[in-house]
Length: 207
Picture 1 (tube, rainbow, N blue to C red):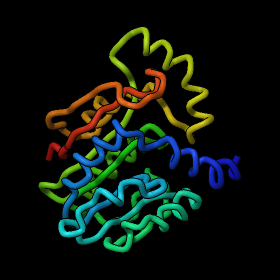
Picture 2 (cartoon, rainbow, N blue to C red):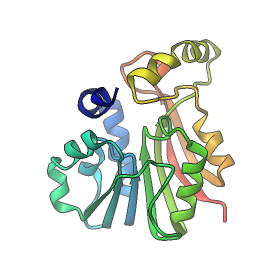
Picture 3 (cartoon, rainbow, N blue to C red):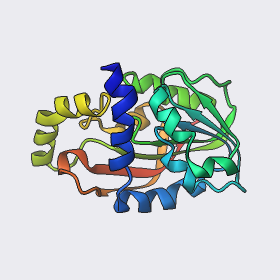
């Protein structure tokens, strides 16, 4: 399983993870990052190309998968960013309290086993006035799609590193102490609806 996770899965994510509808949202959301930035679950570094180097002083790239890190380090955009790779799981953010201005997560909260701990950790490291930019997929509003999500989730978890397509990401963020600003949603990617209902917005800690 570790061979698949470290050697094969990173290339599947690279091939499938940025279709045009998803790319368009990345282009809108990621340039909003500023200051010291933490990206949780960097993966193969797809977001690197969308950061504005003039606004980002440092990018802390959290990614426990060595195969993903190897691909991220080859991204051309890394040359214009001050990137520090962190290899602990997303539940264990190895940064001091109130040390970052922006946290970014794209398609990561669906895979982290201890997602509630991860969300609390994001709130912990954000400075006062900080922002959490999220672009995730999960629980659909349509009952028929939700039934298919429940049926197919074991397959998603096996093929996509523990991906939970039934997670209600907005509810988890609110339970974790965040307020969401102007959230947008929709079916975006050219995949079955059970795996392609997305949420994206800016969230800020309540306190």
